[in-house]
Every structure is written in structure tokens, then in C-alpha cells.
Image (tube, rainbow, N blue to C red; front, side):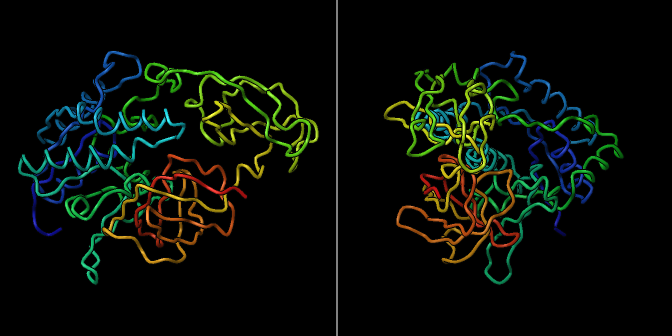
Length: 378
């Protein structure tokens, strides 16, 4: 941008947003920092790092010579993100609250607040990019240049109004370069560890956290490994409540000692168990042995609650897709439907999970996506 602007940066206390603020100030913009407080149920717990993060953000603002404001969005977060998060878990699905947090808080509540204090644009430390397509006049959401840090998956619900007002300064950089810049200019959080926890609860034991909000109804864990055999449907353990498990989960099942001789698809008696299905009506958790069991492989999915960056669905055809964050793009055929869209895969996808998001890509351009409602196994 050649024009100097008033830009409000979401300072999280992390190094990515700190370097974003530095880069914008270096370009000559008037930069103001805002620290977002999105959770306050247990500020004093060992896992809630809000207070520490604010101290770090304030220290960064001091070094950069910019103002910082502490803004509380906890009420908005509880109403618009956390309540939906709990509803999904109670229905047996596995939601991604970071996606909803971006759409509802960071690029809605935060954006609205920034505009009220005179911002022309907002900026965050996400690894993504925004480009104005001169031909269509549309703002496009692009992948970050660092393939290991790209966060466009989490931002796919952003619309044209939000993209037009948003900057992602570190999206053009690799993480190693961001760290180098932070050390070079003496930022106090240059070596701070990246946060890997869910956006609002930090890096605490997840099942312990859910216990506070979701009632537990234990039930049977059944073996679905060998179809049409006497072992099919045998009880191999007890689950603590279907909400606490996700498809493809391998750890924390408590059935490691159960053997299944002659398991199919190359799964021997000591092969790990995976969560493969949830039967909500019968409160049964189905597990299988073998990473490539047919119940874990999907050849198509149906998604609802769709959101497209351009404001409309793309044309039917071949695209790239991510049905979970940590995966390479997979080829798919896209078809819009009355209530969402379908994706069909030439190569079956592993552990496609209802509640997660299926995000569509045309090369480096993130088109948008929807919430996985159902899938058809191989």
C-alpha cells in the first residue's frame, strides 16, 4: 500500500502479530494495537495464559512505540462461538472453534471495534494473504507462502467486506524469517513458543475441560473390524461419553490390550485401534483395527452451512480440498447442492469427520467451504 493508513493490529502476545505490527509501522502506517480477551471463566487457572499474553503484547507495544488497548470480547465469544461449540459436541460432532472464532470475533467484533476507533484496515498475524483480483474486482484469500504455517483453512469463512479491510503482513514470509526479524529488532517475545491450544482454552487437558460443560453418558465400545464374522460387534471396552471422541482418534481409548486375531487389511492382533463410527441412538462407539479399514476411508462427503469468499459458490469441477487442517490438498470433484455441496474423491480420504470443515482451493486461492454433515465410506 502506498497510501499511509491508520491500521489496528490484533496483538496476541505472540511473535507473528508483533512482527506484523512492526512491518506496518516500518511502512509508515499509523499502527495501534488491540489485545482481545475472549475467555474469562478461569483467568487464574494454570492453563489460561491471557494475563501473561497481555503482558507480552504490552511489552511489544512499548518496544515498537505504539498504543495498545485491552478489549473484552468474552460475552460475544460465549454467545456466538462457545455455545455453538458445545451444541456440536453434544450432537456427537467435532467442531473447529478456531474457524468460528475468526469469522465471529476476530473479523467481526474486533473489526467493528477497530472501525469505531478510526481504523481504515485491521491486521493480524495469520499466515495467509489477500489479493485484489483486477479482472473480477473481488478480494481473494490466498494461502500463506510458508506451506508449513498456512492458516487459510481457518480463515475460509471471511467474506468480501472482511477481506477488503484485512491485512496479513507475515503471510508473505516464512516463520524462520519472522523469528529472525523479531530477534533483530529486539522484540521481548522473539523466542516465545507458538500456541497450539484451542483458541479459548489454551493447552489444557481437553477431556477434563469438556467435563465441566457436557454431561457424560458411558456406553459400549464395539469392534467393527471384521465384517460378517463372529468378532463383529463384540464389546471391547467402555467409553466415557460419545462427545469425548473423534473419528480417527487412536489415543485414550483404553482398549490397547484387546487382541483381534486375523484383522483384515493387514491389521495384525497388535495393530492400533481407531474410532470409526458413533451411534448416537444406541450410545455406542465403534472402533476398528488397521489404519486403512474401509470405515475410515470416505469417497465423498456432504457439507452444509457454507461460506464462500466471493459471495457465491464456484462452478462445478475439479479443485483441491482440505477436510482437516493438517493435510495436503487432495483432489476432488465439487458439486453445489440445494443445502450445501458435495465433494467426490478419486482417492478415498482418511477419517473425514462431521463437524470439521471441508475447504475448497483453486491452486493457491482459498474459495471457502462448509461444515461436514455426512460422508460415504469406501
